[in-house]
Length: 287
Ligand code: 13P
Image (tube, rainbow, N blue to C red; front, side, top):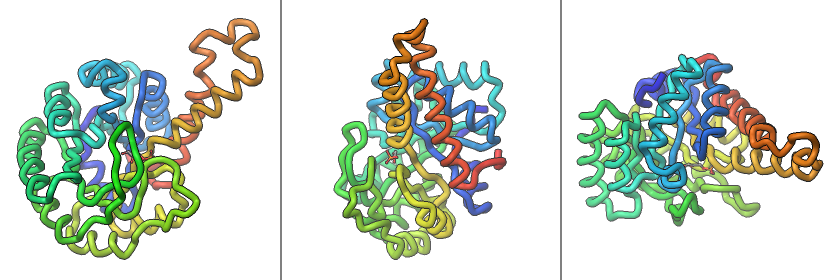
């Protein structure tokens, strides 16, 4: 069931768990995430970066695929189709294409410009029944060409952006896209606490969900995080399972080269990763 992400995240906030945003790349990814969410009766957010949207030939293709697949698989759990780290133009394209949710990442603009553009996009999203996420501070590392220095968000700026009518807020708290480096200092929980106090009841978003240990996840949820984004981890588990299949020579046996067979272990690996995240974030059975 395709919906916007507002209600599922308010329920997560009130129920003290988080909904996973799993980024998708193609048909296999989408199917794996939807089937796992349905099996575990978990709400889920399908994240699409601008790069992934382009790879799949455009946001209209993505919407058509997700809508049709949601219907043909008989998915009854709430699913949001969400633009990840959208530009101003990308947000507008996703509104036109029929996404149910957008993220406007204006974090690299001066705060006044971030406020101005976010305000405009809040109106546009809400007029179209969509939810909208905004960002303050930045997420370290790189995702699909979006590079951040990892600035920890200022609580007053977060309060300003939260007051614009956005539905959920991503705040940089030392989190990083991709694999966390060995010398990583950990999440800035003192900053998260201040942001949570300053922004009231707005659901907070934790980007960079790959590899975060259980105690950090639990602590973040306690401090207002209701959505956790995972991208790299599915890519890593998919790649490892595919590599194993080929290194074992299975693509050479019988019709093992058939793409439906060749990609099957990778798909199973994505499903396993999704299952682990839904369990860790506490969203199983919350559909
Ligand atoms: P990871 O790739 O680190 O899981 O981060 C995903 C993310 O935050 C998407 O915006």
